[in-house]
Image 1 (spheres, rainbow, N blue to C red):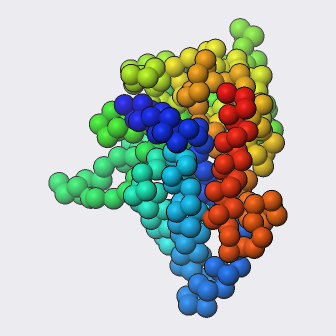
Image 2 (image 1 turned 180 degrees about the vertical axis):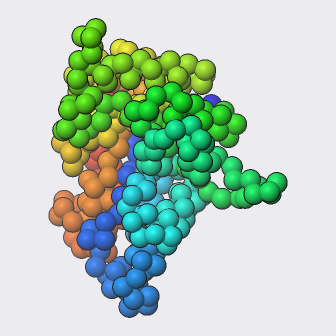
Length: 307
């Protein structure tokens, strides 16, 4: 089961950390942009190449100390086909370095459309009987708002191709309370009901290490709610955003480890990939990848203090 493999990789690296690869042009070192713009002009193709070069530099410096990366597809697809190509190339390169890839795609739609999304992001493309060899993510994120028939089409691909999901349950953004915290007739918040559903959906895919390949997104910025959800979902592996730039810390995660060190993986994006600009980990922008490595080690120490 895929989550077993991810947990073993976490044990190997001793780092329950996923690095978010969410490139924004304004945050890329100037020397990378200047070089590629000079060669390719100010075009979507140039931006895609800039993103890939930047991601590759980060991956080269962190692949031996973290188990996974998480590219946010929106940052790539805004540049069209070239951007999506950079997204796919990033997945392929990360996996060549033995990293797990969580594709942050947050899809949600009716069953027939969900089948197409699943094929695109974790499945196998069959064109008139010929299988296309291409890189796809190991896990993807999904929204559960449309119910089980929105999730079910992905489960077949999870079983057949050893893939996994992280379903949004309690997200890290402040206004998540507008919907997720609304109380239902039984007095429970919506996020608790969604947590119960995700736990149920994941039961057939629980691996040897006690966690399902159907995980949950639970934000570090809501520690009390997260502790409640851990009780509701003891066999659900958590993807935890909100660490670092959004305000979450190792202390906020203290109640989520489920009795051991391997019940979740914690995401940091800007705090790692943008560490070179903080002044804490680098002296110049050409050390952006080394600064990312130092930021990972700093995050690892913070998490270990509260495990």
